[in-house]
Length: 321
Image 1 (cartoon, one colour):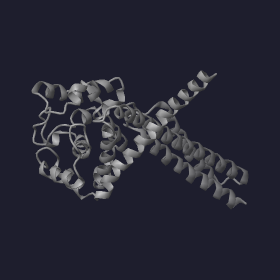
Image 2: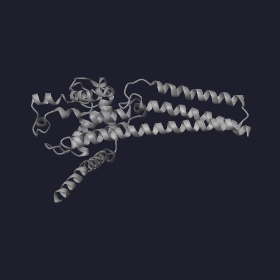
Image 3: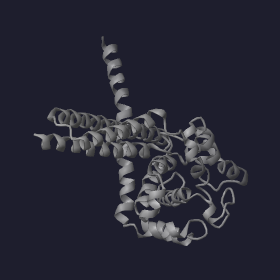
Image 4: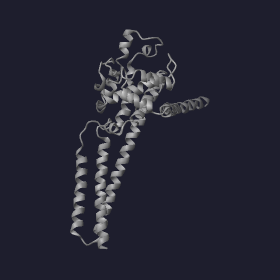
């Protein structure tokens, strides 16, 4: 029984080390993301770290002192299991909350864009393509890019077009010089729209500079590596989406035509490294992004229209009465 008690204490110690790892992963998973912002690690996180370290120290001391009771082992092991359960629950709950927040954001963007045939699904498409490019990056680059932030930046990259007159957005002919100057302000408008959300400061430059060209002829005349890497990812995705999506003033081009155009502007408009990665992605994976977007939009429209159908049905029934 003595050895059984000692084994339980040792298992409890191992669990507390695991709990420390879970807590560190939880903090790292939300650190410097748009859902967490730039806030420093809170006092409660320091307390949790300290308590778990204290538990580990106490478990180790009791194990080394060889206290001859199985109940101490059972109690300490049960305590470790309880802490593990609570931390795992918090970890999963945090993950689900962040996932739900992003889904709500996607839905709102989808509904707003669905009102304009020239925006319908574009931001969702760019988001899907940006994450696809991210998934095909070398592992050392994926480590330094926060995927969640990239998803938000890609989704909101064109939100500033809500401040551009529809006469310019939907113009079937070439924009005049004055109209083009107005259009070029949409990244700045997007940053202004998102400014009240302080945590979005982390991604504002990615949105602001997504129209920069690597040869320095973009909106802000920034050259090459001075353009944020994430903005360059969004730029490749945005270019492909703009080429392939059908607009009121032009038909969409095929995947092969889009790849050919993207290769032509590699090194001038687009980052050649990212272009080379994007062009190696199988056609089926790239085209699946649009299929996924269409499915999302379809579900969103159904969910949005359903309450209206119910209301109209209720009103017709009441008129019969």
